[in-house]
Amino acid sequence: MIKQVHPYKISQIFEIESKTIYKIPKYQREYTWGVNEWNQLFDDIISNEEGYFLGSYICVSTRTMGTPELELIDGQQRFTTISILLATIYSKLNKNRDKLDEDELSTLINIKKELTYNVEKGIYKPKLLLQVQNSNLDDYLSLLYENEIISDKIKKPNNAGNRRIYKAFKYFNKCIDEYINENLHENNNEISLLLDLKDKFNEAIIVGIEVDSHKDAYMLFESLNNRGIPLSAVDLIKNTLISSSESTNKSDECYEEWKTALGYLTDEYSTQERFFRQYYNAFREELNQPFIGDNPTKKYPLAYLATRTTLLDIYEKLIKNDFNTFLENLVKEAKIYSIIINNSDEDRIYKDKLLDLERIQGAPSYILLLYILTEQKRLNISDEQILYLVKLLITFFVRRNITDIPNTRNLNKIFMDIIENIKKMQGEEVCTYIKNNLREVSASDELFEQKLRGNLYDENPEATRFILCSIEALHQTKEIYTDLWSRDNSNKYIWTIEHIFPEGQNIPQAWVDMIANGDKNKANEYLQNYVHTLGNLTITGYNQNLSNMSFIDKRDRVNKEGKNIGYKNGLFLNEDVVNEDNWTIDKIEKRTEKMINILMNLYKM
Image (cartoon, rainbow, N blue to C red; front, side, top):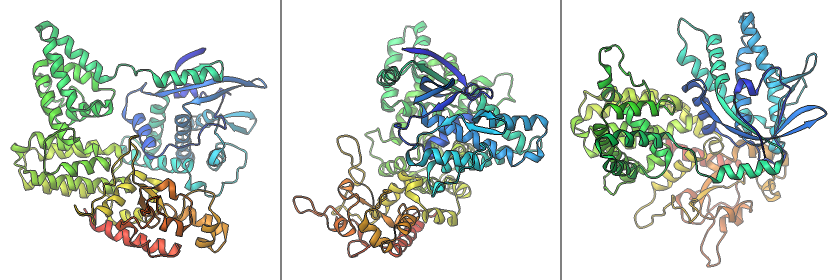
């Protein structure tokens, strides 16, 4: 069944002399990774030590006329993204070709060889062949040709810049620029930093699993996805804790305390791991005190920062130093964390706003809230001031998630620096400092407004949903309240985002006639430029029932009981839509401006 399992460095997978072709079958789904996955991959590469595990792939070995070929059955999203990132690094170095010395030029040439194989002199073909859906293959080949990686002339497909291959390339360009700006100093330069990044990239590990047949591949895929996961860092921390307690005959008591702590954190492993990272990062100065000893020059002997790779080592040392104190503090901090993640019965005045902070993906700020809630009395902070701070954090994350400023990987440092600087402050001084600091690192009003005017839904559907719900919430009362965040039995949102002008590529003729006077090319142009903008979005509980209907049918739709399920559903968001008899670009633009004005006031820093 399994032919071989092997951990490969990325440099081995894309070995320069290899002519192995990695092919994604045409029946596989299109490339779907977005900003969250791109950012996670880039952050994993730059933030972790050599040999960091990036994931695995399953492939079937085939041969075509003697050419080794591997069909990717699982892992194609990661493979595609890694190739795009590699192409981005090549592009950056190639723009500096005139400044490269002999060794650096050799590295540049080798990157090209990693992505391609040489058919004959001067002719390079890609080692990765993407699936054809949604122009994935054409977009990828075009990207490689534009950046002088392959030799076959490929015309850039229409609207390629609006699809994910090119968006990923653009995103990685921005990430690399930020990485260079953050690390540039007198002892290095842009080229050396690009080469350092390439070295980090080369050392990351992916486990390749090769099987003999497609049947074996799918059986293995199902088996891996249906069996239990291996021991996590949290499991290993628990084992260390219980083992340390056995010498005092308190292992049972210790285990019960451990269960109490984890009970506060829910049974979601991602939440548990995040707590352990954020607990250390919030209190690293205090936690490192017993370890400074005779070397006071080293402020954080345990670790400067808790990451996935340093987590276990940090907690093993904390436990072995004093497991009783460790366990006592762990339970106390986990209980406080339960308030932040809304897993507590305590009714605080900021409880609802904490839920909004979670919805806008504000979890990186939990480190700051954990510190403030722990030190609330010493800092002389009232519950009303904490409510103010949670609202401030919501505003910060709305703007951050819309503009992508500051970068995700900088958030830890931002909140850890705030913690360091508020330790000797009191009351209002704390609130003022946090507000000024967050305002300083946030995007400008001009950029925020510019992003709100763009293809918002396509770039960040989660943040788009949040701001649509927040506009609606301004006009709800207890008497006319609708819970737009409710979920069904499958844990899916009942109320979902609806595109008034439909988002599908095959535009219904009724919409071509209405939006573009029958001009299909013009309708397709409008589709690319307007369909995901704020003015074309609303919320409905019956999205699948509306879909590609005509505008009038969407507006007037009722269910079997005669209840309005279209745009006459009573939501404020539809106030500008229900009285219209047609839907045009001009109306989309006007509605966009109205919504932007609301949001600029609502989320002003």
